[in-house]
Length: 316
Image (cartoon, rainbow, N blue to C red; front, side, top):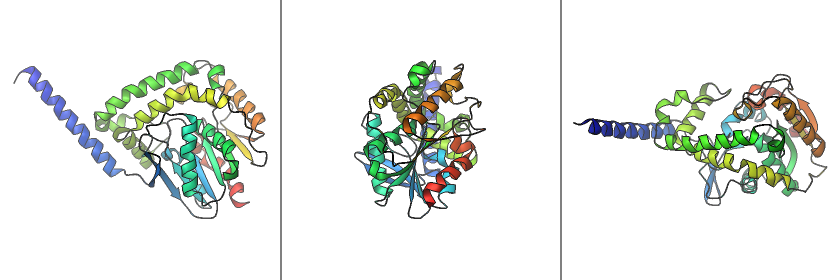
């Protein structure tokens, strides 16, 4: 056999091994929740607990339900608590719709109507998810009991954080390349090399399985590519939040580091971020709480802090 023949045989072998590995990961780590229909795509919704109050958890940019794995069990002791995956992320199927902020609000509305029991819900939004939760609350205030924003993204980030625009464009380009690698099955053969900030144990295994076996990178490419336009779209929203809806903002520690990928190498980012947090507090007339130790993903590193500040809205 010629060298070219051997090389082709190896390529074919690796391809089929990768596809088997993807299939095996998907079978080993199935969706823990249920699938609901939102237009032409399916959304994965994972609800736990019981009670008369419903809490819905909206993840940050390119994150999904697994990132609530430490907070959700705490809240589920007192309420029905639902985390879900936006289209193309986690266990949700991709959507033919563009990754606009409004389309994400439309999907959230389907989730609320499906699990909300006809009563106002508590919305908890992290980072970019806070903008989805805010816009939803502005459009459907009658459906919201309280709004909790976890280290929320500001629609003015691109103008004020040095290097943000370049960082988000770089991330989109990386996801575009990684979606091909994942679809070929190469990532499924080396799942242990997939990094995941703060996730450990079973949550880490599930996270890696989803990235290697599903459509995650297509969804992440869509969200990242649309982020700058979504920031501009949020700036155009003029409708204020109803004063009757309580808003709580829980921000990272003022002197914490900034290890999440968008903030690497951005000098002075924490000072700018804090100023943007204060701006949101004033504009939303929110109660402001700071972590004393956490960075961006407070729901993983300090779930008790979120639990203590969400609980009063459940038991009031």
